[in-house]
Image (cartoon, rainbow, N blue to C red; front, side, top):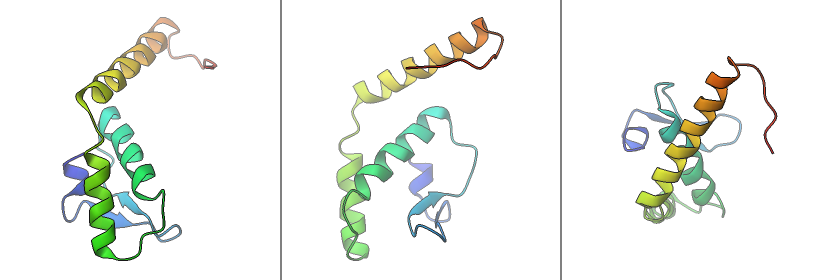
Length: 93
């Protein structure tokens, strides 16, 4: 996540106007966290750059070690299922 917020690694989506990561080398945990942070940041209309910075800082402060650990466990579970089914499509509910 740290890398996704550094200058040059973030751009503005031309259609939504939202910040978007510019590199595809994010790990699954990074990808999840980027979406998590983005959802919190854009839960309300951004008024200006200072407001955006405050929203990003506030969103990052909600990320706990437990959240990261649970995300990692969920990704490991999905990989286990994928290996057990030889990569076949599965339905999850």
